[in-house]
Length: 439
Ligand code: KE4
Image 1 (cartoon, rainbow, N blue to C red):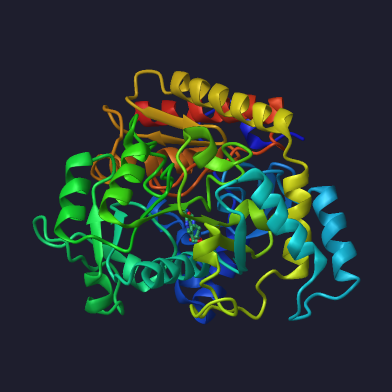
Image 2: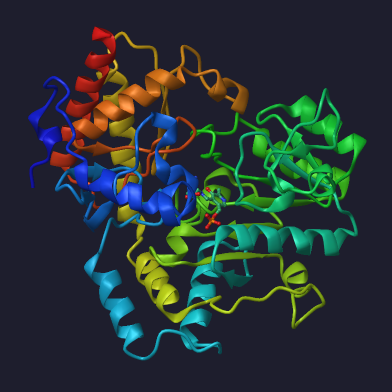
């Protein structure tokens, strides 16, 4: 299937987007910013959003007939690409039996058992419909278990739009954060301490000043772009959480089931007390979960007195899709995804030529930072050449490659990406870099 990208590094072709523009005008009249989630608006790369009509494997087709090799893949769920036949068949078979019951099903038990088999630190879980819900609930468990209110999070990490976590560091080294969004109560933000990622001294100081209920971290942060932990930093989180009497919560909504069968906690050999999961666990349908130590999860209603509920939690269609997705993720699949990611990262770095970029990657995730130096924190990521990234992204779109419309996101290669599409991607990247060089 040819894409504009397969035409290589030709001068930036114009992107036809009349239908998208017309739909966007209508959407602006009925939805805030014309979208149902901010990043889709593509404001960070200085263009209007593209309206998608279908996905096929690793490709997207938009309403103007443009075809793209997709590296957003719905921001992570689509590790098998779009409309995978085995996932579709599982969802259709479940749908024929009804779409939701508000009652337990055998498949939910099977999914929880599959997660427990992959993640020994998650012998018990509760499903939700979004990562935000899962994070909010996990922190409620941590607060109930410790009797503390404070939470430590890292600058640049995103755990969903939980009030208290939409917070940014206060002035100086003040532990009490301030709201990072309108509408967040100051008191909610004040219960959060925001610490720079990969900064051991700041972490130790913050824990000493205000021992928290929990430290919450993406073990492989992918919401400031992909900024892996420095060697030993995750082990330090475990050690410092124990020393402070706090829980360690790993948000593996992105890394879970993607970077390895048991997520980042398996690759890094660091065991959290609670784990947050999402995206791949739903196979492309709305599903997420939080889970962990049995003594903690037994605190959750109706077993315990931490209340949490959800009309569509463990929805049969999402569970069917999630089970189908996980069952196809065997060792050869993970090896293939890791090898593909490493090669794509190398080829993108080479395509940049004289342009200073840092291509940071872990299995199944990568980010091209427009930076002279390695990116080890949110401050480093924010110092990247955001305008150049935006222009490069527009050049990729014009050449048939749909990359994340923000320097602060990761690319999500999938098992559906073919050799031809990877080659076309690198050709398109070279062309977009050449445009930048030509000014
Ligand atoms: P949801 O509430 O969007 O299902 O999950 C929130 C969440 C939690 N934890 C991590 C590590 C996450 O990355 C996310 C959501 N990821 C973003 C993209 N980086 C979703 C895209 C969007 O917001 O539209």
